[in-house]
Length: 562
Image (tube, rainbow, N blue to C red; front, top):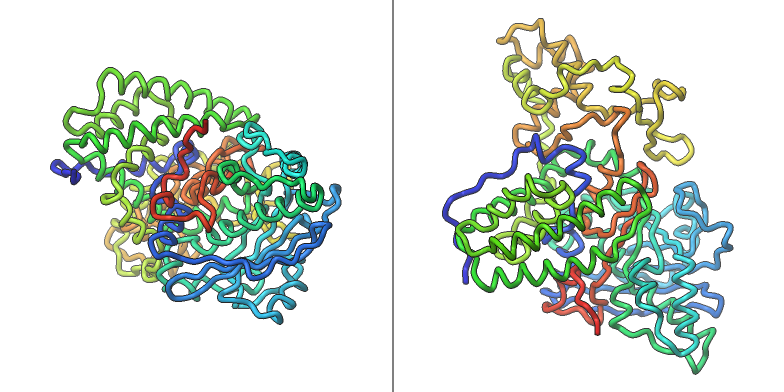
């Protein structure tokens, strides 16, 4: 039955959506970048090959995995290393890894592979060229790796419970794209259909990396077990995702890219508004929601964390699942505007973790309403950053109030409101956050406190006549250019500004990390501190040889195995 849209439910207020506690409760959804990629590859019937797999008995060597789309090919060039345990670290300051990778634009020649072999294993210390689209590295999850190798070598399958608890055999510690270390700039691929959506290069790199890791663990088991080695059961292999350790380097991204981040959040909010506007849910749509609600609970049962913040959120989420079950059993979804009623109920009955889980889940039965919004998630509007100098002072004041009214009365000299400062580390050129009053970092502070800057600009505007122009103001106060630009950008990017203090003594950078990673499609967020988090990617996804239109999308929701 085709979805009916009668009364239009508006998008949620940015003032509520863009609070860090809510952004830090986002979940993957139909618009997640991984699912966009797998749907496209299946729809376009991409083909996959492994032209090179030259790995020796110590697990050292080279492999190449090629993905051929309708117009061009992409190849993951993988280098496996024999890493001593004492060298294995998820820290960005590490200088050696179990495996290193580059995503090559096309099919590499022997000369290309030779060149990459001298640079990719060095990561930051090496250099790649514009024929490389991304650079990455990964380390083994040692306990699970050894268990899988030993089990297969003994002719047995690995223990599914151990796989559920960990979720991956390797975790990436960085996947660099967009021009880092000499790799191709975003502009090179931005107009290609398959990479027009955000982060498709990086998602393809991780997807192929997962296949390499599966093949490598099978190879190492065969080295150990010889003819007795079992082949890893595809139904078990499917639940081996790729882990990721993400730290503060990712957090400033959503501050520094207000238009892009707006497009992500606005697409999700528009999808939610469209589904909430459906007047009558068909039996098939209700059944699909109910099925995926049940399947999602299995995934949540595998979600583990020892961090007190996430432990509390998981307890809330599990309580929310019971509340949702009771709601569905008593009220059901047969009334008019059932999804709007469900979301309205959730806003007072559930935690933010549960509210955002439900906001993602109700999108699933409505691919016709939702999936087309993926084309709106890239940022190609460079003109949005051009300052309108003719704008009168009265209007720019109003724009600042619209996005930062909550910040204008804060005492920005109070220690609790400016306790933290963002800076860039000299050693790794990576963003860091430190304690302003305990470390000598203030002179190196990065402009990652838009709320404080908005308050300062608003104060500087207070003595200006309403009819004066922005151009006149900026001639006298050029230090406020970036704030004026952001305020003007917000006219067409209402979800581009975080409505919280990013330098307070209570800020949790993991909220920023999770907001971004949820759009990647990550699951099982496991904070290791307030500044870095582990996640899982592609758990449940079909491998290249299994990929079809039937399994290309809902793989994120597990089905119980017998």
